[in-house]
Structure formats: C-alpha cells, structure tokens
Length: 364
Ligand code: UD1
Image (tube, rainbow, N blue to C red; front, side, top):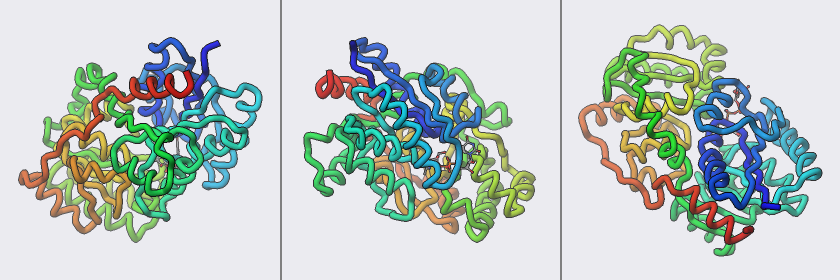
C-alpha cells in the first residue's frame, strides 16, 4: 500500500497551496493524496471556483464546518477531523498557512500521535492580536516537519528552539500554482470586462478584521480609496466580511457610486491573477497577494502595521502603509518612485517537487 497524505483545504488562500502538492503527488506515483476540505470557506466563489481553476477534484472529505466564532470554528474542525483520522489515519497530515483549520487539524492529528507537516512554516508577524499569528505559532510548535518559504522562516524557528532537522526550506508554493496556471492566466485579459487598460488600474483586496470591522477604520479607509480611485481606477473584489461590514456601517452605496471604483464579487483564481498581472498597483491586507505581487514585480501597498512576509519588503515590491499614507504612496507609484523588486530565492515554481522529495526522504 502506498503511503497516504491528507491535504487540508479550508479557506481561499489554502487552495493555491495544496493544488501544486496534489498534482506533484499524483505525478510522483508512490504516494496517495487525500483532500480534506474543512468547509471554513463554502461559498461557490470563495471555494468551488478555486477547485475548478486549480484542477482539484471534489474533496475526498468535506467537514462542512462553515462560519462561527474562533472557538466554534476551531472546535468544530477538531471534532469532525478527529472522527476521520480515528477511522482511517493517514501516514501524515499536511496543513498549510495559518487559518483556524490549520491549527485545528494539527491539534487533532498530533493528539492521536499522527505525523504533521506544516507548509508555509516559520512566518511571524510578532502581532499577537492577529488570530493567524497564534495559529502559526501553535502549529509550528507541534508539527513534525516544517516547510519554510524563505530564510527568515528558518531563522524564526531556530530562534524558538526548533531542532534544525525538522526544518526544510522548500520555497514558496503559491507561485507553483501561478506557473501551473500561467498559460490560462495569460490567455485572458479580464481587465477588459471592466473597460480598463493594461497598467491603467489598481486592485484592492481588504478583509482583515483590523481594517474592515470597525466604522472608525472603515470610513477613513473608504475615503482614502475613493481619493485613490479619482487618480487611477480601482477594481475591488469584495470579501464577504468586507461587504457585510460596509453594509452594516452604511458605507456600501457611497463606495459603489464613487468615481473610478469598480466593485465585484470575489473573483476566481485565474481571472484574479490575470487582473493582478496587468495592474499598475495593488492595495491589500492579504498575506498571499504580498507574495504574488513581488513575484510579478507589481508595486504593492500593504495596509497593515506589520507583515509575516518581510522578504516581500526587503527583496520585493511591497511597502507597509497606514490609511493616511495611501494618497502619497499611490502618487509615488504613479510617478515611478517605487522600489523595483527581485524574486526571492526558491520562488521558482518548483516548490512542490522539493516537498515531494522531502516527503520521500522522511516517509517514503
Ligand atoms: C480567513 C482566515 C484568514 C484568511 C482569510 C482569507 C482565519 C482566522 N482567518 O479569514 O487568515 O486570510 O480567511 O479569506 O482562519 N464567509 C462567507 N462565505 C465564505 C466564507 C466566509 O460568507 O465562503 C463570511 C463568514 O460568514 C464570516 C466572514 O465571511 O462572516 C469571515 O469568514 P472567516 O472564514 O471566518 O474568516 P475570514 O475573514 O475569511
């Protein structure tokens, strides 16, 4: 019997991380991938469309946990995942990223003495108010194998006392998805749907609670985005959390009707990357988009006080900003005053192959 590995899919940013590993496992032919979707993200445009775009099959298991408070969501995933692994334990569970399902599946598996590998290990924002930081630290501290994307990840783990043999630097797996899908991404120009020219628009994606939940932050943010849109049109695919909050605080209509603002539903992977590829700039608070813009050499303004991905600043095209900085930063980009980045080492589309080699070495 070939070894089986569970790949935990849960929320939108996870799907681009498991897809290359799934495809590489199938090609490797000595092990069997089993996809477990926890159902943390469940809307068609937050989940199904990504599975379709990334060539992923219907998950082998769907835990259908849905939304809830942190404890509710984390607890529901633990209970549901434990049932599966008690019946059919895998040779190892592979968790990715930093969402609630990541920590939940890690805890459930480790308490049953199963092996866990964490893909995208070692990232630290040092911001304990971020639920993702807690998820990262707990997941890394108990996982057996830690696959890091960049040297800062290794250093963070070593500083925390992790034994070096648990760490393998594999590079950035998200960019494998870009390379796998590049022909389809580049075959389309989804900006045409919005009537926009290449390099003649910005993309905005914001969903972090610290930016979008409270009116005191969201109202000035909407104002700053409107002023940016007066200089260059912006496309804003709205995350469900952000749409809900704009509605609750009575800001949605004002934003929708502003000059240069193109609002849409969340956009699937291939069309979204097609938009990013031809954009003049990106404004975001996402983790993965900081990396994708560095890879594609697109100026990125990250509306956060810190980042767990500092290499996108030191080597890439990313800068952290506060809301009042936004107009100046947009002006800098439009006037060509923005650092040109380079691709960090091992961000080369071959990360999944390195993961499979490491798996073979450790579990083959
Ligand atoms: C989660 C992750 C975050 C990641 C983000 C990407 C945690 C703690 N956070 O945050 O790290 O960057 O996903 O999107 O795991 N909702 C829908 N449909 C869906 C999914 C969510 O309507 O398919 C709604 C929920 O009801 C909820 C809100 O969106 O009101 C937030 O969803 P949730 O998964 O709890 O957190 P995110 O903010 O998406």
